[in-house]
Length: 318
Image (cartoon, rainbow, N blue to C red; front, side, top):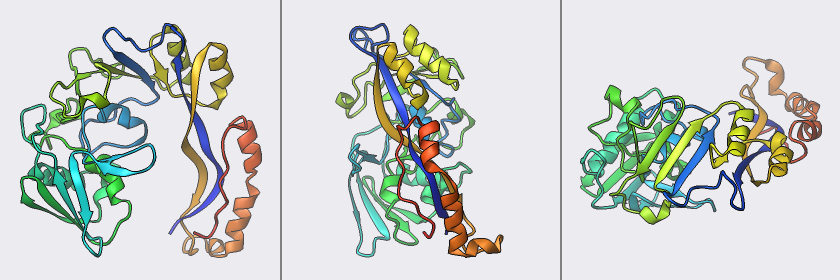
């Protein structure tokens, strides 16, 4: 089991959009939203998807079985209901009817089974989400059972993320899926307008079952790893929003950009050798506590995060 020596958490990220008629406000004429992202796309292959900054690219095209609300509640999505058995090792999903992927293939229980097994057989960083799945049983077209080797309180949350991302079974395992996604999500990748590595353009999926949840007709993601480039793109009107950090708050506010604060990341030290098998000294809780307290978290918060982050309770034993 790992231990966590917390040194600083909640490093704030900023989402800034121009306000009051500024040039970077989202277009109301054709309802276009353009965002700068600090990572480029890794892959559209559902077996290679990741969370974090990669969701900018795959969430527009891949709907998920369940949805995670801003309040932290897991709710239905492609699955209209979900229920565990008494010992929480079998999760039964009832699926939404009448959904098709953009290649015309139906979304059904067989598609759920194909997607989960595809992720299990893949080498992506999110394969851990389905590591405990022992079987996926198709009961009928709209009912599927997911069997786990042990209760996993996080599993329904995983179905809101990569484990629940649904692609057309006909596209799974093909080389094309890495660049051209085939999902049932609210948007479709416009391959003609997209410039790989520079600009990814998504247009509305006219057949999407819940269009009111997605107000924009066009959604554009521009990968920009450099923070200065993202801020300048906001100022010049190239994008409507961008993720930044605490170092540019003053600059953003001076430029009349709207700044929204949201704790999205964590900084800390994780020690995996709690039993001292590799480093015997780490078996002594006092050593772990000493490492924890040797780090000046207050100085880190003040000098790196400009005093705008939050420090959690220290932990060295769990």
